[in-house]
Amino acid sequence: MNHGHRKDASAGRARHVRPPLPGLPKGSRPRVTVVVTCFNYGRYLPMSVGSALDQPGVATDVVIVDDASDDDSASVAVSLAAADSRVGVLTRRANGGPVAAFNDGLAKAQGEYLVRLDADDLLTPGSLARSLALLEANPWVGMAYGRPLHFDGDSELPAACDLVRGWTIWPGRTWLARRCRRGDNCITSPEVVMRTELVRQHGGLRAELPHTHDMELWLRLAALADVGHVDGPDQAWHREHPASLSVRDFASQVSDLRERHHAFQVLFSEMGSRIDRAGQLAAVARHALTLEALDRACRAYDRGHVHEVPVDELAAFALELEPAATRLPQWKALELRRRIGPRLTPVLPPFVARAATRRLADEWGRRQWLRNGV
Image (cartoon, rainbow, N blue to C red):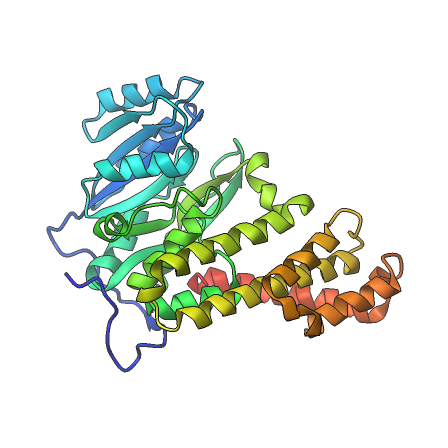
């Protein structure tokens, strides 16, 4: 089976496939291994594992990797394995973090396809069959993903949409180039189905990326094969905890940008020879992060958050990535706000208008992401 890029006249453009869509071949039950990594989430394990085992139309097995939990996770995992032969358990003696836990599970994966599922997340009903229909029909696609449905803590699961509006098939390097232009990660994690062979051949998750290992994996897979998106349905439930929202905190804005920069560095250092115009794309990613740092600093002035947001650190990070950043219009816009000061900037009409324009752009971007995943 060819896992490379499709060579045709539309190689640079996304291809939109509309219903009627092919389903899984009759009599076919592709095998998926779901690696469930767990650290102190024993209370969530039964629902998470159950959401994987209850997927119709596919053959699913689960590898639970308990990362030396302090709670009853190990005993819960053993009980689940005793109740269903499709469940296996790996228990780590020392906590190694999510990267080591997933890579241990990857080594035990038997399925042609692979899902990474944190123990507090769940797959929506039918999500695997929807993704596998796309992957089976498009052998050059290395991963397929859809929309995650976020919910808070221990609240009730929100209703999930199961209507498929179509598929979007991105040439992998086009998808990768778009991510470089944005400098961000558009995927959460549990909504992705990958070809196991592709992940295994190219090293699993990277230990040197404790916070952006998933982002780097998506970028790497896009460098190796095409990317599919299931348009319309919610493909997974992602549980939000206060601790998991740290990247949204004002104080962590610079570390968020720095960690994404590190993901691009690792990608291009390891995969540069496999990526067309790798040096150019790396520069594009650096520029995107430079602009985002300056934009975050400007937003701090426009929203009256200067005393909470590390504006000076954001500006320093922009200069670190791009020493000529002082020539950019965005740098000059920040300097203007600094001269006017944090008291007047939020109330002056030009900056109020700029804040409103940003909100519209953010909403447009969100709608684009909901429609086709990018």
